Amino acid sequence: MTVHSKDLFVSIVGKENVKDTQAQMLAYSYDATANFQAKPDLVVSPRSTEEIAEIVKVCAREQIPIVSRGSGTNLAAGTVPSKGGLIVLFNNMDKILEVDKENLTITVQPGVITQDICNFVESNGLFYPPDPSSMKISTIGGNVSENSGGLRGLKYGVTKDYVKAMTVVLPDGETLKLGGKLAKDVAGYDLMSLFVGAEGTLGIITEITLKLIPLPISKKTGIAYFNSLEAAAETVSAIIADKIIPVTLEFMDKGTIGAVEDFMKIGLPLDAEAMLLMEQDGNEEQVERDIQQMIRIAELNGATSTALASSNEEAEVLKTGRRAALSALARKRPTTILEDATVPRSEIANMVKAIQQISEKYDVQISTFGHAGDGNLHPTCLTDVRDEDEMLRVEQALAEIFHIAIELGGTITGEHGVGEMKAPYLEWKLGESGIRVMKAIKQSMDPQNIMNPGKMFAKETKMRLVINNGQ
Image (cartoon, rainbow, N blue to C red):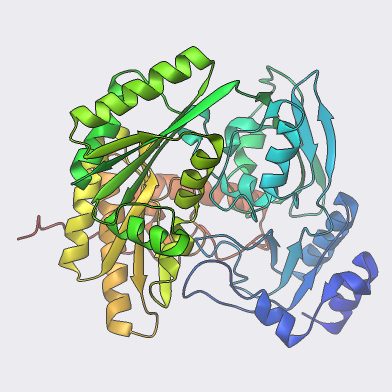
C-alpha cells in the first residue's frame, strides 16, 4: 500500500479513525483461530455507507485487498488479512437505527453487538432468536457474514432466517439495497441470500434489517446426566422422534463438564460422561408438558440424574455454563482448536462415537460439546501449537472428523464458516462442480479479488483420507 493510498483513506475517514502503528497492525493480524496470522497494512473505521463506498473505490482502483472485521471472534481465520491490505472496522457503525413494531423488524448498523440487539428488543416485548455463544462480543455484521447459529437454532433457525433487508457496498464501490420489510418477495434472484454467509468475499454489508417475533410467554430449563456419550446422543434422537422441538438441546462431554465446573464452580458432577441441557419456550401448558416429557425420555435412555431449573436465575447459570465451554476448555492447554462438524440429527450418536475413536487413533485430546439437537457438534482439540508432531496429528484428526461427517450426510461447518482454515476441505462437501460455480460467482462480482482474498477457495484441496475402520 502506497503513502498516497494511505493519505486517501485518511481524507475519507479522518486521521482519528485510522490505525497505522506496528503495534496496532499486530493487534489486527489474527482472530480467534489458532495458528493463523498476517498483518494488514492499515486499519480504518468508517462512519457511514458513503465512506465505505469511497474506501472501496480506492481499493478497487489501487487493487488493495480489503477485509471487513467485527469483533474478531471468527473461528475459521475468516478475518485474518492473509494478503495484507486494508481492514475495515465497524466500531463507528454501531447504532440501532429503527424498531418497527408494525412490521416486526429492527434495522441496525453492522457494528452492533448481538447481545445488545437481543436485550433491546426484549425490553420492547419482542424477540430476536439467533444467539451465537459469542453473542456478548460478536457483532451482527459478523453474524450475517458467517450465517451464525446458536443454542436456539434447533427451534428458531439461524441468522439467515431473520435477515429481511440489507445495504451492501459491492467490490467496485457501488451500493446495492436488497430486500425489505415484506412477508413475500420473489422478484428476481435471491441476491440477499448470496451475501449472507459469504464471509465478506462478495461485498461489505453496511446496514441490516432483521425480522423479530413476539417474545415467548414462558420457558423452562432441564438438565440430564449420563454414564455414556452414546446414551446422551440417543436421547437427543428420541426427543426429536417424539415430535418435540425444544428451543435448546445442548450437549457436553465429560472433559467439557470438568472444564466448565473448574471455571465456574456451579455444581456440575465431575463423574458424568455426558450432559444434556434442555429448554423449551412458548405457552405455559406446552412448556410444562414438553420439558417433563424430555426428562422422561432422558430417564428411559439411561440418565443417571435429571433436574429442572428452579428459577430463571438457575437456568441462566446453566446456559452460561454451556456458553462458556470454549473459554473453559481454552484454559487447559496453550492452544485450542474449535471445530463444528455437523451431521443429520439421526447420526449424532455415530458422530460422537467416531470422534472418540479418532481422538484415540491420533492420540490427541478432544472434548466435544455443541448443539446436539440440530446435529452441530463442536469437537475441540486441546493442544500446543509449539509441538509440531502433535499439531500434525491434530490436523489429521480434524480432517478425518470432516470426512466422516460428510460420509454421514453432514458438512464441514454448521455455523463457523469456511474462511481460510477450512478452505482445503470445501471441495469435499461441494464437489468440483460446486467449487466451479462459486468461483464463477466470485469472479463475476469481484474480478480483481480484493474482497477478503484467500478465503473459501484453497490453493489446493487436501486429499480425502481413506477410513480404515480402526484396523
